[in-house]
Amino acid sequence: MVLIATAFAIAMLGTTLPTPLYPLYERTFGFGELITTVVFAAYAVGVIAALLMFGHWSDQLGRRPMLQVGLVLSGLSAVVFLLAGSLGWLFVGRVLSGLSAGIFTGTATATIVDLAPEEGKSQASLIAAAVNMGGLGAGPLLAGVLAQYAPQPLALCFLVDLILVALAVLGVYIVDEPVRRTGTVRLRPQKISVPSEIRGVFTRAAVAGFAGFAVMGLFTAVSPAFLGTVLHDTSHAVTGAVVLSVFLASTIGQSLSMVLGERRALTLGCAGLIGGMILVGASLLVRSLAVLIVGAVIAGLGQGMSFRAGLGAVTRASPPDKRGEITSTYFVMLYVGIAIPVIGEGVAAAALGLTVSGVVFAALVAILAATVLLLLRRAQPPSG
Image (cartoon, rainbow, N blue to C red; front, side, top):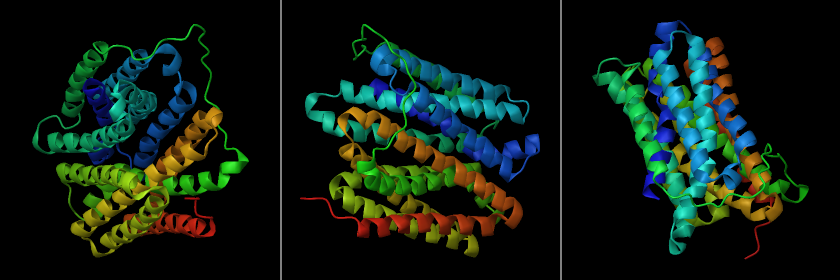
């Protein structure tokens, strides 16, 4: 279980390594903030493709083969970034990274649950979520520190990543396969569906999740520009630390949601998104790094609570024979949320400037979260 969790963290770490390096790529290849957001969004395309095409293959082929495929794709992504000689290479690297994450997230979570002792299975999914977010947050910090204080800022972090991926491959190899392969293998794309009887629950969860993942996309794609251009802090290490704070706060928020219960966690999570986005928008107006960090932490807490509560509500309300399809639909919505709003932010930044576009983005996320609060007020509270 520890070996799989470590491999999970390493795979997720690789997906966010480019975050503090985007300003360097912009100068090296001569593109602007809009292209940066499109490069970032290519990752979401890879994740969605993997979720739809390979989401349940590990149930039939086994966990280890799919984990190995995910790690190979992660390693290929690092190689592409190491060899990158033009903008096109960045798109390829991000799509490969997204495919790796899309395969790894569901498979590694299922494997951790499979390997957990019976008395610990109820906590296994929370452990997997914490490992996921921890790895995502560690990537920008590792790349930022190495880019700031070590040579070869566009290469060294990916060399380190390749070493970590090789160790992860070895770790996965020595773990026993927890799933028996089925006699008849039927590998089909995952269906997308939401039955009419749960659309109210799904809509509230999806809108909250969309808003929360838009926040994560904002910090992983655009925070280097905010820090460097608006707040005049060009330290790659600081960028990495700010992004890490969001993911750590999300992990804490997910843990809190388990204690609070779904409805209360969704309510408090949306309130956290509203408050955090107000502070993020204000930080750009007053040019304060401290206010930005506080806003990032509050928004991260809100994202974690609302995401975990929304996922729990959707899975609980779904018919057992449709649960996989509905959960996949939910995650597709989240990754659309991590991509499309960020591209919109890039378009707005090109037209209006980073400060105005950032404030507008924060306001729109807050409005989405407030919409969920209104929907919750209109909905009947769950029995019991």
